[in-house]
Length: 212
Image (cartoon, rainbow, N blue to C red; front, side, top):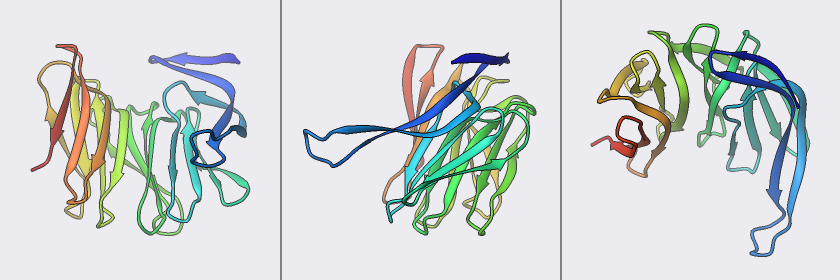
């Protein structure tokens, strides 16, 4: 493993990407390590995995570009955003139609990006570029196929959130009380309520915020 690049706190490695999977769900199941892809300059921050309701495994990863690997019996690898220095801080979700949604960081532009194949082809868009934003992304899709993303605003050290639930993308700051919002994770319950956990670095506490 060789360090290839260092900038803005992101470390990129030329390395192999592996998947560890269980052969079954029994307590004594054997675990298999399966190679997926190599070599790429993969960010030290985040590789994300999701499984569709028909059993297809999807993995998002990147650093130099954004890659998508999926297994429908065999592994397929594709570059879905060839822009320079994108694909770290990835998070992935699949909706009930088995469409894939990925949030990730664009290091070149210090921006939050999002890509989906919901229309049949991959369409990347920049969702927020107001300052240095888009670190620690986490994504979820609700029962209406609306997308919800939490992320860190490193310019202001705040927790931010963006959704297209109203029809257009609307970013908001959820917490600005100190240095907050890193290492966040988002989930949606059966009532389509949004739950976000995140780190409060100022007070060395974990916090949670929930929609009402």
